[in-house]
Length: 155
Image 1 (cartoon, rainbow, N blue to C red):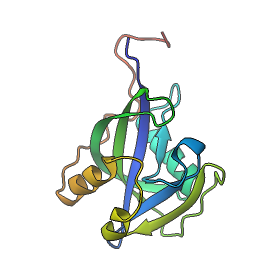
Image 2 (image 1 turned 90 degrees about the horizontal axis):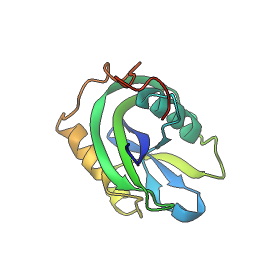
Image 3 (image 1 turned 30 degrees about the horizontal axis):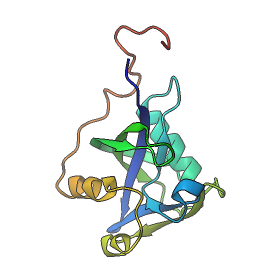
Image 4 (image 1 turned 90 degrees about the vertical axis):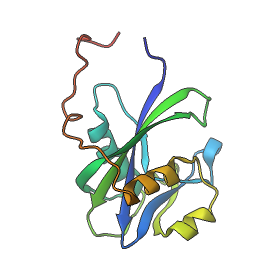
């Protein structure tokens, strides 16, 4: 049985700038990341990235253009292994306004140079940006409605 957390994050680019959030949780407070978070039970990564983006920035996903990567990481809270799906997303053309004020201190678009000056939560951000810039992405239609082939219920 797998023993890891699953997360879904969104890389959103608008006019050469990327949507970033400033973390507010104690164990990552003040670090910057792309929006995203844990995939809940019975939720696929595509639905999770839409939910997380809305919760953390107030913005709705209007389109998912592809999967930029699946990365191995560790939880900043407890060091547990995490598999992170990063999707290239588009949002409505509005200003981000975080809904989870205790968890997200700020949300804004930044260019790459501005991002480099910030304390980042992990290195997944630049790998995802590089994959986007090189056009490295996979289609997402196989994720929606995915059911594990032989598990009928939660183990």
